[in-house]
Image 1 (cartoon, rainbow over the protein chains, first blue to last red):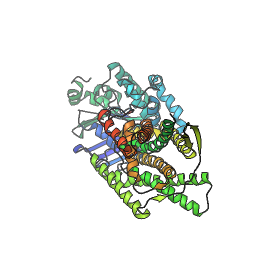
Image 2 (image 1 turned 135 degrees about the horizontal axis):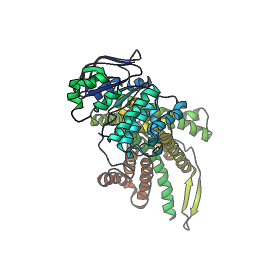
Image 3 (image 1 turned 90 degrees about the vertical axis):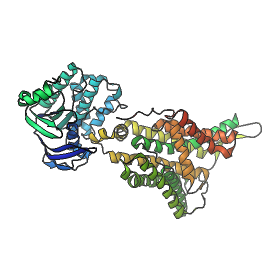
Image 4 (image 1 turned 180 degrees about the vertical axis):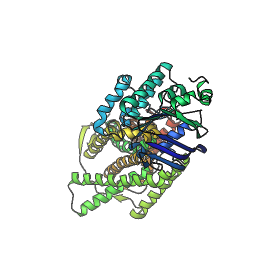
Amino acid sequence: MLGLTDVYAYYGAIEALRGVSVEVKTGEIVTLIGANGAGKTTLLMTICGNPRARQGRILFDGADITDRPTYEIIRRGIAQAPEGRRIFPRLTVMENLQLGATTAPEVHLARNLERVFTLFPILKERADQRGGTLSGGEQQMLSIARALMSEPRLLLLDEPSLGLAPMIVKQIFRTIGEINRDQGVTIFMVEQNAHHALRLAHRGYVMVNGVIALSGTGTELLANPEVRAAYLEGGHG
Amino acid sequence: MEYFLQQSINGLTLGAIYGLIAIGYTMVYGIIGMINFAHGEIYMIGAFIAVISFTVLGLFGITWVPLAVLIALVMAMVFTSVYGWIIERVAYRPLRGSFRLAALISAIGMSIFLQNYVQLVQGARVKPVQPIIQGSVSLMERADGFTVSLSYLQMIIILLTLVLMIAFWQLIMQTALGRAQRACEQDKVMAGLLGINVDRTISLTFVLGAALAGVAGVMTTMYYGVVDFYIGFLAGIKAFTAAVLGGIGSLPGAMLGGLLIGLIEAYWSAYFTIEYKDVAAFSILVLVLIFRPSGLFGRPEIEKV
């Protein structure tokens, strides 16, 4: 479904991606783990065309999206819940969700709202509240819900567990599993919480300094001594 | 009392015109964080389009007032929209992502260019137009014969402004376009990630602001009966003052700020000296900037992460 071949990209003046190749197949959950500053966020943003890849190719459903503008890439069926959640703070929860539906047919709006309210019932209660007044966990739910409003076939998640209480983290990961299993959305997820992420994922990649250092199934990576030493026994698990 | 009432009517009329122009300043500032100093020139062009429209309509013998005014308004909105769109495209978009001062310098350059362009093609002389809408109603009369009157034109200006402001507010608050506009205002990167065409949304903001300034231009032509290539400068800076007073970036702020500046100018001219009416408006600009830079409705500037 999504294929990156030898992608280079800059984050400001820094070369953040230095020849990354990654593949995500339809129906999978693929996770990308790595230390802070490894280039994980830049990778997700480069898929969406912001920043553009300087070199290499990005294919989505067989079409080359490397040089397409962001809004066009999104219209093809990719959605992202980005780093820092980026909820519109002065718009209501409902307006945030409506904006998420920008690329979906308008007649599907009610159905899509129903779908995300079933996943995250708290958002229905908060519908008229401003985004900025939500708690961190609620904002994360809203961020994922907003991304789902566009009926994406590929959902990009950037650290959905960051800064959340363990209870909420569990709930978020359970929901991500449901979105993938029950709704057939392919998921490519960046996570610091390697333990949770690798257990949930079909496959995983480990990124170090802008290159993919390791890849394998979730179970393989969980068992890998290097991965354990670097990402699992440091207290994240 | 009667005199005060008359000045209030005059001030409201003036304020309506300033308010319509101020919306363009505040919307553009809201979405790209720059002051579009060429906006006053858009208003001036709107006023000239009105002069040209009325002249041409006169030649064709279309003198039925409602139709003539309607055509002038539509023509002015169409042309100023195109100007607004081109200005953004030519003078600001190439500089997006450049340092902040670059766009500001470009705006001032664009403003000077437009003034000189109009001076060149229309001449430097003041252009008079025949009064289009005449007549008034007297509201009350003082013993000494001073009458408070509300002209039909003033009524039309105030009503039309009110209608446009409500319609514009609805557009921004209720429609998908308005939602996209507010989203871009808050976070352009995220708006892009949701599939919004950010560049097009910015263009539309310029177009809408320009169309409202175009209407203000037509009103000015009808109200004062004279137009020259330089009117955009003063009116522009006063509308900018109105936007700052209301809180730059705030739509209701621009509307209220416009009315306040209009009223202050009218009262000042009436009770102090008419020669210094511009001083009054600009003193307010200075005072607001010193004591309340976020204006009446503005949010205090929060550094974006």
